[in-house]
Length: 137
Image (cartoon, rainbow, N blue to C red; front, side, top):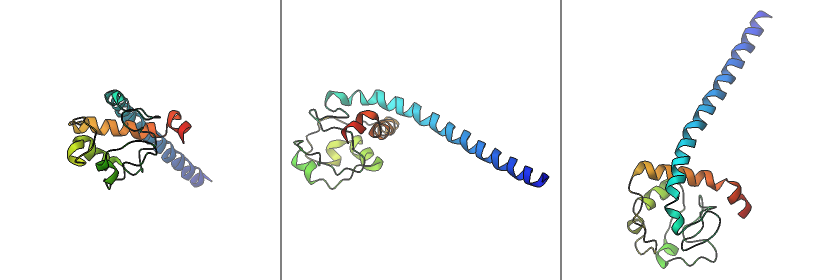
């Protein structure tokens, strides 16, 4: 019986350590997400999460084909772009939109700082699952 108790205690400690580790991981991204939300304020001049403005909405962005939001008037270049939005493709596009998609109508110069781009992408990922975006889906 003593060996069984020791095994159970070890298993519980392992589970608890895993929970603490997972909780610690959740803390770090939230700081990055908050930084990304502040960076997203720059995007609000043309974009919104849940509705189209001068630029298309960002809800549902991850996994979506570039130039495919129904009813949005994309440039011919963006309609032809062979891009599925994910962290890698967004990073490349946001670094220099006109170089990534020559002819895009997005006139923004881009987010040149890699850390800022990572934070913005983390925010967009988090926002994709937000209540605001879930209402739209």
